[in-house]
Image (cartoon, rainbow, N blue to C red):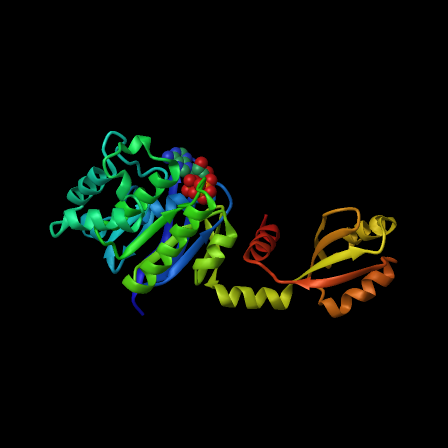
Length: 309
Ligand SMILES: Nc1ncnc2c1ncn2[C@@H]1O[C@H](COP(=O)(O)OP(=O)(O)OP(=O)(O)O)[C@@H](O)[C@H]1O
């Protein structure tokens, strides 16, 4: 199988902080992988190592079979990173930014036409002559992504690419990413705290906690596994007088989450199948109706993280 990324026994320390703790991590070429994890888990550190911005303290990292430490410049030709620490030149226009980055990245052919067509794709042609510092943050982020594509990388590393971006722009970015994967066979690693975003585009997810990969699988396998293990049940009480009985369910081991939405509605997370929920409502004298809700990646993620933290 063709691997875009292979990390073996990789550790990265910053003084006493162990940002990555002896991890093994692989991504197959042409996949879109979502990298999830709480603040400080090590996601940016992982992306910075792959993109050769920082070195690992120990271990081996290869991109498309090339060692990222020993053959930095070869790897750089194949990879682009988009993040809030890859800064655009504020005093240049979007067009000039693309040209500059293209030159830095040794793009020799058709640089001008590539820059113009990326500006067109991202709806930035009308701002071609405006200084980048005067663009809206959404347009700056579009430019950031356009810039990452000018060298036609095989692997795109997107570190929270839609943070603080409006709904339409983030949808555009998501669709563009999908298109890049589909038409241009780019491998994409995307980190995000927006689970619904990752759910929409990634075919595989990896969860990083405290510098360790605690889960990695195809999205479909993870969702299937948890659909068997977990039920999310919406409860509608007949009257608020049953609320305290409902709250008492918290003491049941089988209830892993209980969120009160109003005096008569709640969402319950449980390992119990919905067929057996009635027994519990009788035991606790809860007069209600209830229904199974579709499990989301966010439910699965928080279930995994809760079990861990
Ligand atoms: N340059 C640095 N110097 C010292 N500590 C650092 C440095 N960079 C990262 N760290 C620490 O390493 C750990 C992992 O940080 P990292 O930024 O990789 O996490 P993250 O998962 O990307 O977090 P977030 O979701 O908040 O962006 C954190 O404890 C962080 O404080």
